[in-house]
Length: 193
Image (cartoon, rainbow, N blue to C red):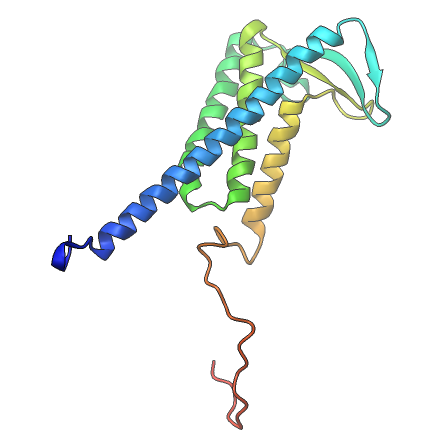
């Protein structure tokens, strides 16, 4: 406490940083849990509804398939335990990165991070059951995939885009606000730089 029993500026700043860190991490975890739940429910529904049928949606067909490998069936000759361990390690690494990054990330990056983690977790949980990942989105020109894959890849693309923007900021609330409505006085002097 500072003079007069009031909290010091450092203490208030520390509390604000702690609150921002907690809020950011909770947002990532909620997004990840939501995405994982959606992915796992979609996989279960696909197994129940598509066991003996295919649904034509135009550009995509709903067609049940099982992937014993990882992306594009790579590694399909490896033991299931190895694939579960490797994909679980990748999911843990993504979680660690998100835990570290969340306090400094904007809301879009937090949601995208949650999508990456949730997609990865849904696929790890699915593979841990029986050694394969349930896929059901088939295009005919791309390997069959699932909704968890879609969340994961979309999240990666969004995060990559956010990190390559030259004007990258962490959050609009944390970014300095400029008053673009203020009119500079007209003078004969050259602008100051």
